[in-house]
Structure formats: structure tokens, C-alpha cells
Length: 607
Ligand code: M6R
Image 1 (cartoon, helix red, strand yellow):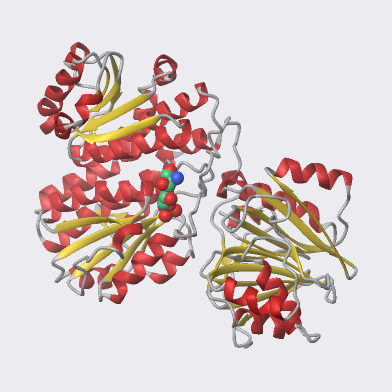
Image 2 (image 1 turned 120 degrees about the horizontal axis):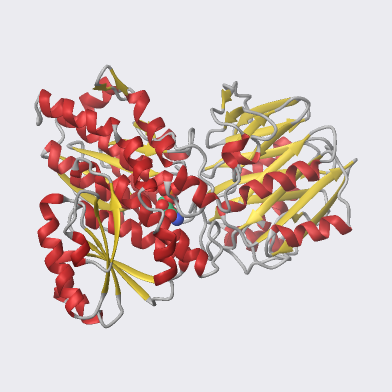
């Protein structure tokens, strides 16, 4: 969703800000804008649509000045027009502001400000902030800023410049992502690391309720009471190439191909001398000791990774596992208390629904373990325990390596917990650890075995609807494969537990329907094949996904996708990879914007 960049340096801020915004494009947006402070005079340019539209304006009308702020807006309050695009200016022209998040009490504030005589130009909630700043400003920006944030309810990351203080940019964070980058003769703030990694690897992770003041050679952080806070400077582990396409046509394809390496990063540091060693494991083991059940909560693909985790944990740890959409958890009456361990899963660590579910579970007394990719994210900070997935930056909106690394962490966690709870013996434990260690190589083989997926996509890309069927883990993978296809190719697709098909959905199967049958769990193969026969009898074309030793499949299916043989419990990451490629090539054939599908945002920071 919205992206923010702030910059103070020696030269033209506009270049650094525009490049930063380019790196935030993946978050999803529908308009953009930049404001700079040139020796005490604020100038801004905004454009609806993509950054190219803004670039055209910037090319024709130079924005000079060493300090400024920029924004990519994903519309919530008001259409994606030039007027609603950020930055917004105060009536006296002294302040420019950019904002990510939602001001929940904006109507009440707007009414109050209108009575004071302020005129609103846009439909946004953001505009109340800039008028409040003007209202409270008596010559001290910090004071005005702190008074302003004390009036705001909701979530926000804010960037501000003030004409009276050329060379200084201000930022505040409250339940929306914001980090500060410490450069050499220049400093920045941004919604995430991708926007600043070209300048510096040194970052400060702001906490909610903190305010930053940056100039070219100084960064000062305050809390919302105005007290200075001493902050640790962290080093970002990855480099600028990780956030670039590296010769691939799309980020999604690059990220699919990176999966063997990403899974290795998730697994290897946690296996020492044949034993799984998790972060903070003594405390985690003690939190898990007397639990009666596990609740997994997440959204989208992270929910699907949780679905995989559910089957593996139940099978190995003999604990009841409930999986609940994070967006629904608060509206049900979940049995969550100190006897439950909650696991939340999130690539970005900023998903508003998942944050709300996490808080709900904590409030009910449950300890929360978070499986997260983005270091220092809100979910990582709020949880009692964190297992990072170490996938590196994921830029394509459709997650691939984000999902498979979550699955790999579930594989590790399930075996680790089974050992702690003594539900498996030493021999089984050792075999399972060996199987997990083989995952990076098996995933590479999953890619290598399927050079024909592109041809397969060309055969089927005109189909109107695709059904994915499978049982147990195959079904969980089908959910993810189906979502992948929907989100990037806009093809209607559904995933069904294979046995459910005959209870209604089979009515939709007709001549030429495409059914992708996931049949990688050997123990369930025969059952899934009977469902394959049912759809074939009604004219469907069947693409089967199974392991490479299975020779019978060629008589059952029209086309086959093979994956390497692996312990059935850990099949998910290998099985999903060729299906990610299948979706990718179908979307390409259909001429879709693969990395930035319509209507979607990378991290969904509104509920
Ligand atoms: O950042 P998160 O993992 O919390 O995001 C959750 C979902 O929004 C995300 O997985 C979404 O479904 C992806 N676009 C799927 O590719």
C-alpha cells in the first residue's frame, strides 16, 4: 500500500526520492507525488496513475532543493486523482505532508478545522493532519508535530517538510511501517528498506510512537512526549541487487528461481549438528510445554502456508490445530487462552488484519509465535517469539519465495515441537531432519524437471476457469496454486478438497474444463485418482502433479507436471513451485502486469 520516502542531502532531493518511490512501486499505488524545500520555498508535483506520469511532469518542471518528501498512494479515502494524491499542503503553504495509514477520527477533526476556517481541497483523511500542523505551529515544528499526533486516532506513518526549516524532514510512526536510513552526508526515511538500500545499509527501526528529525548530517529520534530516544543502528543483511530484477523479465520469475537459495537461508542456520535449534528455544519450549491446542492465523498466501503447517503439526505433534483467517478471527468466538499457542504468519509483518488477530490472541492470554520475513516489522515486534523466514526482499505482489520459506519454517517448527513433546522418537526425528535438509536441492529439481510448463501454459491460457483438486497437503497446495493463478492472470480458479467435488462442484465440469489434480501424497494417490476419473468422464482435461517415480499417471492425465520424490510431509514447497511457474506463464500469455496485478497491494495495511 502507500509508500513514503523522505530525503535530506547535499544535492537534488528529487532524484533520490523518485528512485526510492520506484523501489516502493511494488507495494501497490495509483497516484504519486513529490514535494521539495528549496531555500524555504515548498514546491510540489503530483500525478494520478503510475510513476511515469509523475516523471513526465518532473521532466518539464524541475523541482530543485536538497530536502523533500515523496509518496505513492493506494487510494482509500477518495478516488486516485491528482488532487487526492499526496503531498498535501497547508493553507499557508508552510507545510507539505505525506501519509500512509488511516486517520479514523478524520471526520470529527475535519469538522472542527472547517469551523476554524480551514478549507479542504481533497477527499482524503490525510488533509486534516496538515491543517492541524498549521493550526498548532507557533515557530517550532517539533512542538506542532507532537500536538498534531496527539489528536490523531488510527494508524499512520507521516513525512513532513516545513518551509521555515530548509534541509530538515520530519517523520512519525504509529502502526504503519517507517524506517530511517543513515547515510554519508545524507539521511533518509522510507516505508521499507528497498527504497533506501541504494544509499545505505545502516537503518534505524522506528517504534510506534516515535518521531524522527533528519537533516543531511544529523538524525534525532524522539518519543511522542518529545523526549530524545537513543536508538540502535542495524545493518541490513542484503544488498541492492536483491531488490533488482537481475536480468529476469519480472521480479516474480526471479523470486521463483531464488527459492532453492531462500529455503536454504531459512533452514541451514537452524540445523546444527543434525539438531533443529530455534531462536529463543528454551523460552519457546517452555511456552509450548502445556499447550492444549495451536491456533494459526494469517491472510492470503500466508494463510495457505499455515494450512500446510496445520497438517504437518497435527500429524507429527498430535495437537489439535485450528486455522483461522486473521480477518475473521475477531468476529468468531475462538477458544484462545493461555493453553493455546498462536502462530501468526506474514511476509511483510505489516498486514493490518494479522496484527489485529495477534493482538486479540495476546489479549486472551495466548503466547504468540510469529513467522515473518521483514525484520523489525510490526508483527515481529508485537509477537512473543519470532522465526524469521530469511527470504530476502520480495518485490512481486504475488508471493512465491515468501510462501515457500514460511512452509519451510513450519516444517522445522513441527519437527522441533514433536521432539520437544516427545511424539516422535530419535530415529524418526533424524530421518525428518535429513528430509528437511534436502529441500533446497529438491526444489531446484522441481524447477529443472519442468521446462515444459511454459508450453503447457500456452495450451491452456484461454480456459475460462481452472479447478485445483487434492487431498490433505495436496489440497493446501491447491489453495495457494489457485490464488496465484487468480491474482496474476485474472483467470477464475477454485481449489477443492478432491473428495468434495462430487458434493456439488462437479456440476460445473464440462467438456474442455481444466482440472489440475495434485497427487503428490502417495498414501492418498489412489483416492485422488478416483476423483480424476470422475472429472475425465465428464470431459475435463486433467493436468496431474505427481512425483517423478510415478509412471502410471501418464495413462490417467492429459498432461503431467513432475516433482522429485520427497517425504510426503514436506511435499508442499516442491509441489507449488511448478504451479507458480504455470501461473506465471499463463499470466504472460494473457498479457497481464505480472509484478503489479490490478487492484492488489503488496502489504495490506488497512483492515
Ligand atoms: O504480508 P503478508 O504475508 O501478511 O500478506 C498476506 C496476504 O496479503 C498475501 O499473502 C497475499 O495474499 C499475496 N498477494 C499472495 O500472493
